[in-house]
Amino acid sequence: MKTKNFLVAVFLFFPFWATAQWPVSLTAGAGLASETILQTAQYQSDNHKERYSNILVFGYAFHLGAETGHFFSPRTGMSAGVEFAYAKSPDDNISLYPDGNWRSISLKIPVSLLLALGYEKRSFLRFGFSTHISLSKKSPEYIVSDETYSYHSFFWSVHAGYAYQAGKRVRAGILLSRDITPYLEIRQDNVGIGANPVPVILFTDHYFFTLTATVSYRLGNLSHR
Image (tube, rainbow, N blue to C red; front, top):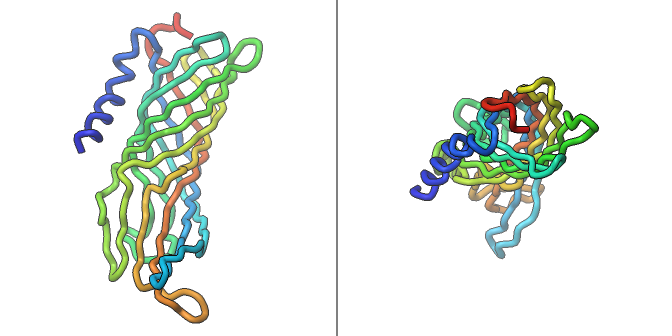
């Protein structure tokens, strides 16, 4: 808990500390989300595991925050920030769940490589990764019979995007983000699967893929890039 609180404090105050050197921008994005739900069956007799199913459901996502960045050469730079990130999809009907939907709520800490394109360098590509500090309820969130819902305190995602400098302070673009570790894991004991049901432990991992339209507004001194 102390480590988590320290990380939250560092990344909340870092953009303001860096203002003197790197410009700070307010950021926002909203769009579509698709949730991948991977299930793995573990046979209790010999602990053998095998992939059981792969389900895809759709919803929406948004994020709000701030970032600071700097170009080390005319075309190459980096950025880092902190955002509140939210993604939601409808009930996938695997099992019961409060409010009938799945949610990923986190403090997102993105780090990106920036590449400027074109003669005027108004177009930008972005590639990077994000650490997510989960803001969802702690495990076990909800128990139904032999089911246990466990939210991961930390999970990771990768992202790529494009932005265009629409004015001196405004950038607009798109951003694709994909979880590479699950934000939620469900364990179900004594589940029967197949034509001749054999009791197994069924693990269900939840990941989000999001496509959002983004906008950022630059604060402070415009003498910086």
